[in-house]
Image 1 (tube, rainbow, N blue to C red):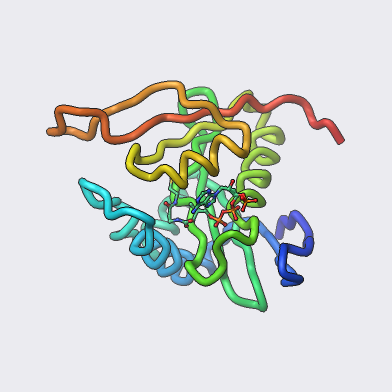
Image 2: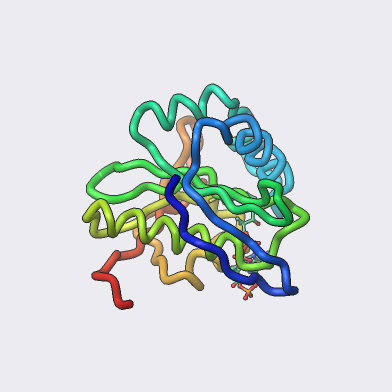
Length: 173
Ligand SMILES: CC(C)(COP(=O)(O)OP(=O)(O)OC[C@H]1O[C@@H](n2cnc3c(N)ncnc32)[C@H](O)[C@@H]1OP(=O)(O)O)[C@@H](O)C(=O)NCCC(=O)NCCS
């Protein structure tokens, strides 16, 4: 089992991160649905993440996808899923339990994604977020991502989501 070790999040809660595994499928799917149901703004169209199932998570892993899970007090508190796409590591379903927000968990998961990209020799991370979610854009910008394009969902005349990327350099440590 791969582990990125533990560290102490703000407010003195110990958090541990490890690679997403098949056994996590039920808990992670439930967490993703719970997290996306508690976005700061209801999105149009609704997020497909609201319909994520354990079978989807297992299929993602079976297809070579990866991810990371963060545990707080022994329970799944946050997770991210990723896969190789378009010459980079595409990060999806970044989700933090509403009870554990603003403790740095998303930031920690994005660091884990960066490490995964580096170990796969991929030169960039990329992801998409809805334009209406200003808090998400603030998160990605604070983690070094830049917006590279805007897109509309099928059937929508105006852009609904933005694509962000972050170059992944050599390990500085
Ligand atoms: C978006 C989400 C993953 C953020 O998780 P989080 O663990 O609370 O984020 P972090 O604590 O790591 O925040 C890191 C930084 O992002 C920014 N940020 C995060 N949430 C923010 C908010 N609500 N408003 C403004 N800035 C915010 C801040 O700069 C923050 O640093 P700070 O707390 O030191 O100011 C979480 O709110 C979530 O699960 N939302 C619902 C699902 C979703 O939208 N996922 C992303 C899809 S693209």
